[in-house]
Length: 72
Image 1 (cartoon, helix red, strand yellow):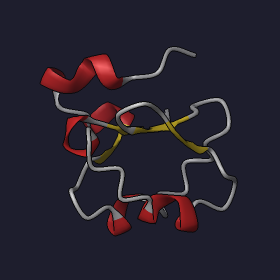
Image 2 (cartoon, rainbow, N blue to C red):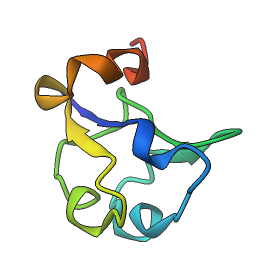
Image 3 (cartoon, rainbow, N blue to C red):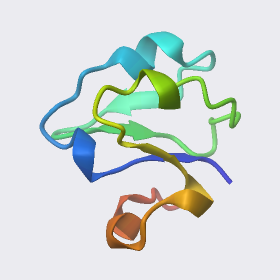
Image 4 (cartoon, rainbow, N blue to C red):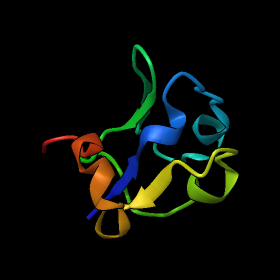
């Protein structure tokens, strides 16, 4: 399991999560930030700093945002 950045981040890209990630697994995409699942160490440091509450543990990701999972 890993963390996922979902719909609330689209067109926001606050980037507070970048500073908190100890392994630099968060990257900026065209319209949102993304977590590279193969690099994520599941520490959860990014989740509480997200101002739009867009970061979810993969198994807690709301079904309507399932398309935000990055394939591994």
